[in-house]
Length: 503
Image (cartoon, rainbow, N blue to C red; front, top):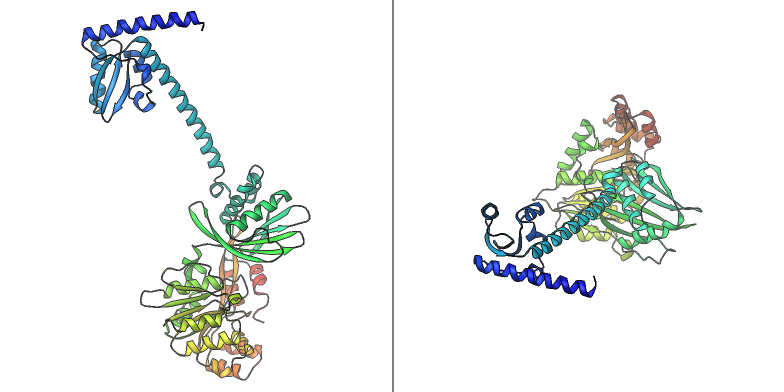
């Protein structure tokens, strides 16, 4: 616009405003120039844009329920009727102000701009929500193929979220991140079996490892020594704990994340798959006010889960329960849990001595590894405490001889052990996908006087097994075959996990 044009426009506008002001005075209405009011969409949208144009009226100031409305034709009875209806409908008190056509045009253009901005913002927000929805890995990743698809188009900072969500959704117990000469491999342990999940490019390895270390409070620049830590992460609507282990390897650090699911600790013995006969023995053993219950089996056989299921049964307000764990895997409300750390001179034996001074009714010892811990635990079991623990043996029969091998006198075991449970986890049959989930197969041994005598005499395994069978023990293989006959698992699974443990 030229200076001349601008001058003519200003003269025309001044003339229009002077005429409008005179009109307002004649009709006894206030007068305003709306260009001075930086109105917003909340105020303007008290009327639709179509209504503003139709009635040549626009709201421009709002304080509480008091609203100023500028209108070009206050003499129009239809406009006044509409504004009264608007006020009644929205419980408003309106002050009517006369404005020029130019003032109204300014407000209309402002209204249009604000609507356009809002539409653009809404569109951007929708795009953002769509992106966030697409990257809600906990909702969308349900298979290895989904994992591979999402991995193509995400940043390295999002890679950990993707891998973790995939592992949780696929019911993995562990995530293995393994560097190779070309790239690195991610594997999930699902139902006890490691399965390749995805192979990724080498340039994503260090950022992924650094992010894991940062979460777990590990030293990012220390790759030549093993490190251990843990962290929590929100996966969908679940808060999941992860235990982290790093190990130097040929091509870089090998990282393993153990997934600690809070729902696991709530499982009952029945849900774990113990049969009725074994449940009777277990319940009788833990009802006793003292004595020891031993769970045996290799790593990954579900011993800790069974211990937590026992604690869930025993955890009542009138009992003092202390657990000694390395590490603490799940948090149990109402239970005192102590983290053992041999590197800080706080061994299971040290922790057990301290725990006995806390006046406990029940003590859970994560694992009996040495003579000192075994001796203190057995003494506690004989002096009025119920002790739950684990020992590494292949079967129930060898648990007491294992304690003897640690240096415990056989006679010291007499009457101190309520029950020995040996267990494995086998995959359950799923007609569509082969296997889904796992169940327990076990053998429960309640040591009889004859069995204890045979241990005292250092009798061979076969004789001990025969005595246990005569006392009513069903072996893991036999329990497994019953589950095969019931269509729960397969003979191949039983063979895979038992590995002739009862022969």
